[in-house]
Length: 128
Image 1 (cartoon, rainbow, N blue to C red):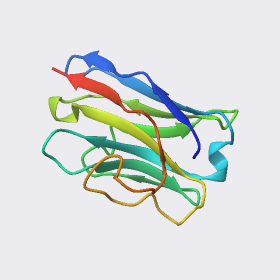
Image 2 (cartoon, rainbow, N blue to C red):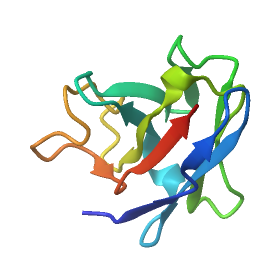
Image 3 (tube, rainbow, N blue to C red):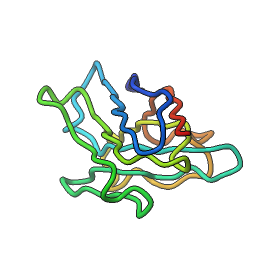
């Protein structure tokens, strides 16, 4: 397993911004497919954004408001979240697939109860 460490969650008022960070120590993110998920209690794990084979994907719910990016050293991935809404409240998880299956996958639970991707520890984002 590759360790991913997240930071940057917190509480913000609607319309505000937050930036989440995810750092990898043993490898670099350009050797993986990478992205962000989120989950709220009682709802399915939602793929928010991913970069796969150089192509960027955003869920309809966040397109135009969120931006995924990679830092210059390729060891930190970011999720810039603007114009936040209360419905963006969730635990956010970064994930990476260093086997490069061609997509991070969809799951009922973040992370799933079986081995698939490497995951960060999760960070709470609360929008009020």
